[in-house]
Length: 100
Image (cartoon, rainbow, N blue to C red; front, top):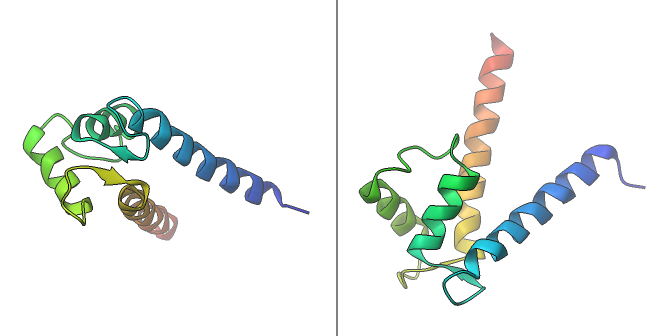
């Protein structure tokens, strides 16, 4: 039997995957995010966790840091690096707040 936390975590993963697919399908390939799709996803879905979304240079640098094969698009695995980094930072923030 799954715990309530397990169900919430599974739902969160399913949401991440489905949102990636929704945004990835707008410019062509539904398996990758173009620069424009990535920018739209980040600004609309992660506005409080990703800094400088209004700065084109910052967004290009962020995407470049994730785009390991330098093809100008992000696969889900490449995008997942961002999610992992954001989750780690959020976890550190929660731990710091608990210590106060």
